[in-house]
Length: 389
Image 1: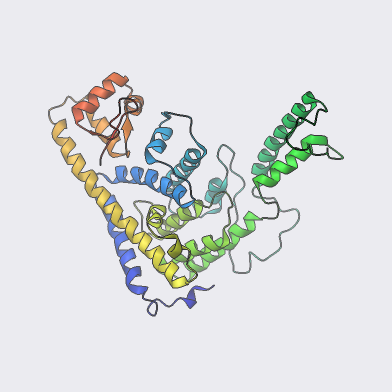
Image 2: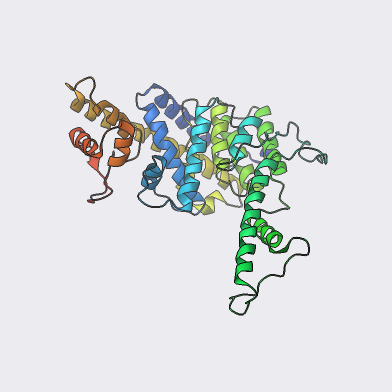
């Protein structure tokens, strides 16, 4: 659906669009000028990563994510925490590179790579509207071939393990809770197990490279027509929700939309917290059949995220001013200033996290926290945490 079918004035979108543009620009200016800007950016990474998992239907506590990021987990990390940490690292990588890196072939190749694997060859964007529809040559390298090869190797090992376990148990199939599959004609249980697990891991008929190229075509077209940055971001977000290029990395779409805003210069000092804003919008509005309703929901999400960001900076500046009073008269080699910076850059800290970051003992960390007068959040005897409320 083309963007020309959405008239800003007739659908009442012009005022929300201007408001979202203005609030984003004001927040970005505050982040650039405030001494607490770096701390705000780091805290926003955690908040938006947890919100991205919330949109996917998975609950992740920001406190657990902070501890996992600092390698201070109080329990074995869950699958949700691991995924949220992947979102966190992706946000940091996008924010730490140049504005156009995330949407470049090299940047997309790195971001699409699965955790722990090497980056696949760059995903080439579609340069023209008809480029995505062209058939690829048979000898053209697959951008995700290296990644899939590693996954296939893991599946093959899993299949061999299942086959060895079946061989040890022998032919006693009466005790099995379900019938064992018949061995394949060429490779036995190993190939059968690999094929079954591979079907669960990914859809063999889904060409994510072509789908990603189709989405990039929409982005390039919006950039070429010099639309307002927020409207171009809406078109990119809408196209991602419709095309769904990445089956297991749907959360990446919101990060790429935020990167598009940064590339256009609308948010040069920070990466917009789109997921955190969308979390406050009802699912019915975000996925409405009416396009104008979806656009209003997107604009409201950006405005909500910008307002929340401005309040967060106010809170950080007030907390920093209170800490400054306690830092007066301290020695130059005191660890209190570094502790204040750490607390301002994390939603919460634990004694173990402070000890690891400041290279002190946990007893010394507790003494420093008491001296700084930070509020305790948990109220428990074990796994205590402190932060700014």
